[in-house]
Image (cartoon, rainbow, N blue to C red):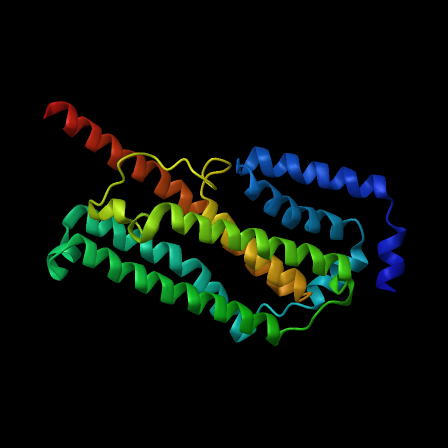
Amino acid sequence: MFENTWNSIPMRAVIRQLFISYLCMHVCLRVRELSDVILVILIGLIFFFQMDFTLMEEFLRHINFYDTSFCVALIAIIFNPFFWNLVARWEHRTRRLSGLFGSPFLACYCLGFIIILLNVLRSHSMTVAMKAQPRWEAMDRMDVFYVGTALIIVGTVLVVSSFLALGFTGTFLGDYFGILLDEKVTVFPFNIMENPMYWGSTANYLGLALIGASPVGLILTATVAAAYKVAIQFEGPFTAQIYRERSQRRKHE
């Protein structure tokens, strides 16, 4: 039934809906580069399913929004960026963590390890939620599997290369601890996109959802993308302000 319904959708309609999805994403979210691809896939899937109410009903039928594991994953996704932004801004204003540990580097390392643990917990909770809810036959296809695998490879490359380019303190909010970089990082992957670690992580989650043929995985991945987008709106201007303040101090020295 799913295959017949899938094949009955005109290709022109598919292309039109994906194009509309791209325009909506670009105007409303204004995300660049790989994030375009990730959000086009997510929003495109939604438009794609809306072209046939049977598919949409089947999609929603495979999701239990009241499942405990789903709620735990949702909380972990939203909590993580909220936590590290709150703690980092508090440290920037008060220097309490640096005073407690006797060094801004030690304080940054501590926060970094906590963030790593929280991200591991988030990944685990998302995996548990996907396994707890049923796979969808319409997504259980080899082409979808290959797309998911490609996204995981690309996402992993972006995350690892971002970490190598920034270092530990650069990755884990060292700017807020007064550990500033000498200059803006412009090597790969920062020379092709902004916030590659966030969007690489999102690509990994999307890849896992596609490989697992998991509708709830798509919902959780969309939540991850939205949470990162909100975090970027706070982190970007605040980090830019930190470096502007340093430039002004240097001019007066």
